[in-house]
Image (cartoon, rainbow, N blue to C red):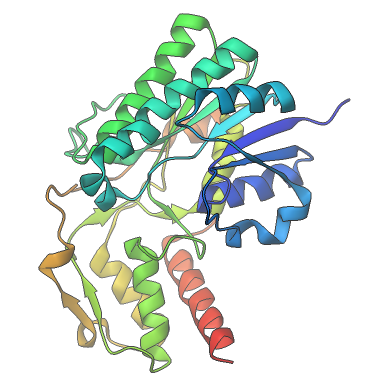
Length: 324
């Protein structure tokens, strides 16, 4: 049997790197698409760079997507590329829409035209629920996005459903709730916290400035969540799934656990700063993973406290190495 091929857009991101590792373990040939920019950051995939094929392409450029699909003939496409930092989406709403919304249409069109038998995964987001209409959120909960990023993700989600129903494509959306890891970008609050905790513990920083400490999220481990992406493309029929831990924790709780792990009291170091408040806050995101659990047998393997400790330990190790 010939080796299965998978294309991952956004392979240099947190999810792309974990998914690439996972697919390599499953015996896939992995093709990773990166944008033609002068500064591509390969840090997250440098340990597997020799095992994957990196190709240049862009969600803003239809012809590059068609060319990649023709040249590499993947059986599975995972669209993880997006402008995915929520605060930036207010500063760059049009660019966010181009990548995160219309980019999905361009890649679906490329799939439809080159090889409609390709199985397609779209990275949807819990940010689509925004001002939540029910708690917890399921596959049937109405969307009410509260940021340009959330709005763009809603478009990407529905255009995926539309192509599945209009052209009979095997196209799925995974509505993933917040998933973190030591590979998370430092601009995200979880990694901002654990990095600051490590710096404070090592005497390299004095305090940590944060926005809304009461903001609650359903946080899981990215390594678990990419497994769910793959599982979605394996059954006979395509469908959409919420992937979540089913638990909710506040930013305050995250701080408490992180500082606690290194023997410090968070109240002595955390400063609430209005500069980090969002124009429109998302209140209570918590997903119901019943469907993905029952239909695909997916369960998370890393608990919330384990995730926080893993991230703090990784930051301590990195900072000590850098110091040495």
